[in-house]
Image (tube, rainbow, N blue to C red; front, side, top):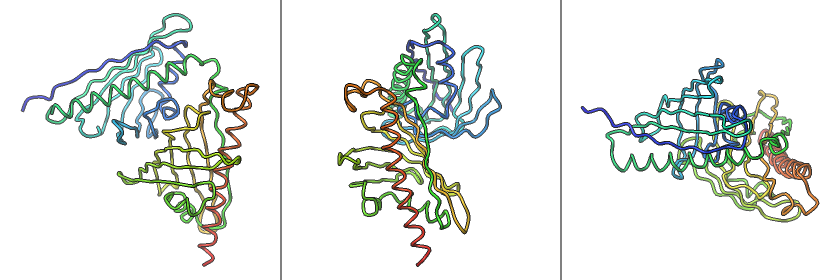
Length: 317
């Protein structure tokens, strides 16, 4: 049998940021859902400082795909090589390299190489992978270039926070409430509409309308990755409100037979150009951080409070 043909794609961009900053963003794959539009969730399975093993979930041609990758990080050369350990169909192999080259003290060139093969080298499968690779690579590099323009402000643009609620019920009841989000419009006053599909076990695609404190309605779209055994639900908003260019989060439920704690953690990248348009001409990034913190915290705390009531009342029956 003839060997499968290897196809190569090359994408590159210039980034208005030092090479070390760009390499750091590429190296920190756990943060990719916050930095890269296609990435939904990344789990680090192994890491010794150089060799890394990752489980990844991402969109590809409007479908959710998951795979396991191994990476070799060379910080001195600013180069990262990767190989999909268990490729997602229709791939039979996928390898590649990230290369960061300095173009001065505050500008860099970022190159992304992919080499791939598909089962049987079928033309329609090759086209599907080329289209997905091109779409995702362009989105990733474009967003990283945009973030790079503001690299000196990243500490102001990126924010994370969490809220928690204690529950007098076992974690299984709380987790079930959070996982069965299709029931939320009947149970949560701030959710007016929610549509949920689950094509892959544990991977949910959601479209939801929520009401803010001033009565405005916002439509968000998300992908959620559920881990029932660990009591965790990770999510990535694929359609965000105007103030946020990215929003990820995780629900975590811990505890035992006599009680549990549910935690909601958010991570956000603010859209600086939208601040005055949304909040008024005198608003700044500090005001945007306060607004987002209060709005997201209020809604997630409301959801956790209703999960508490639901779990405790179920236990009492």
